[in-house]
Length: 530
Image (cartoon, rainbow, N blue to C red):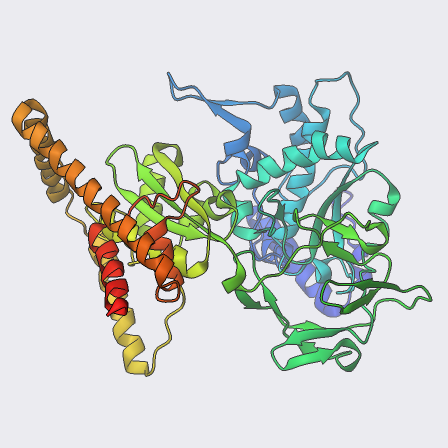
């Protein structure tokens, strides 16, 4: 009887809790495992976290950033020293437990202390993101901010030693890219976590203390799904805020409840370029043009606030991805930083046909080219459509586009029209999935033979070059005529016509203007002269 466990602790439980505890003990005594205990253990999680070794080795998590591949043997080699791997296993003995509350890493420069600290923070961040509701799990108020901070003696050191390493690992991780968000900066794209969690770097306590007090004046007007409303009129109400995402598209936030967060005698006022005033507390943060955030009290006259442009005010670039194995292309446009749009291939998950090819061949087996930049939305859509037609990339034998370009969400007059469009799009996706590779190979072989015959036959080669030169000269002549007529009739051509005729890049050369499109523009001018 002396070997029996002390069950007196059960007396402190409620009847329901005692019943569950006894059921768990019974299951453990019979099989050594308890399904009920596991259900309770993971009740707060929407995803069961992986253990630390899976986290650092699996390419879905940090494996892509922590492992190098030997090109000769194909063997993966971990860049984390074995000592630190054992240390991580000691700190995180299982997928839920952190053995220590405080960890101090010591030793000389170059041992990898900072790198291991970053990995520890990212694993803790990952486990928190696996929770259904971190705020409820930790009994926090919705107005609070869960902050993961990386501190050093200076901001530059904090950014260079830890922050940049963390961002590189996060942006190389498929899991984090799926579950987080990239900021709107084109020059300094950074990953940020969801669920009210914040990831920052700093060099003093003012960078991390008081993270919950980012407040606006009650008279501030915000845009909601119910129209423009003042915050003071929305207290304790559930609302949805209309905002703008990283691509310039209008989005609707999740439902949130408006709560007063702080009372203060000190209020800051910022006058914007349009003359409007923004009233807020000293700690309220505003986004700058480079995508970073700065507390209002730290702003200087040199700081430029980010412009939240409408989609039609943004500038776009047009780009292509070319498969170096089979020469298939994908044509796309974005108003975003291209690296944030592409995400090393992860940005194309909505195009399963292209994404399957990326997974099959690898992102590094594609040539990535920016054709041109700084276009208006309409001009970018027009060029995208022209290139898709020119390269025939909506044909699954030659490309990965699943639509003919032009972007935008279609507006249908009737439900029947919408259903017809959906069926057509599904059929196009089906054709892409079922593309006949043999036909493509035969077509490719035939094209190669035709080019070889031309190259091997001097006469045919000469004829081909002469035809190409003649077409270029005709195009040049048409462009010259368009310029002359346009000077006389400056109001005839649309912006799209001008961009097609006069070029998109600095040299004034449009990479893909066809003779027929230029001729139609010339005809329009000629008709106007009559």
